[in-house]
Length: 133
Image (cartoon, helix red, strand yellow):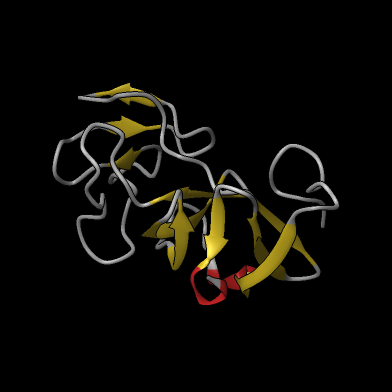
């Protein structure tokens, strides 16, 4: 299967296996993972929406607080929006762009790809694995 985000990851990007493709169900529970983002340990999450995998930092763009209303649950009841449980902001699952509520820009995207039944996230200069620092 091709990369989940636009194009394949550049050669310099390290892909880190996250989960089996089957672990991410359409508009279902997220798969969480920890990253170092700009020197801070942060929680991130991967979701599947409209057949594609997307990943973001678990940080509201309004105030840096985790967004899930229950562990690994980000989608509203319709399965169309990612919600911040604290502030009520609604973001697009495919882009992280804020569509409603208090926002200061889009959710911070983490690169992901899906190939051979495995979802991987991409370590880049601004987002690194916790265990390698």
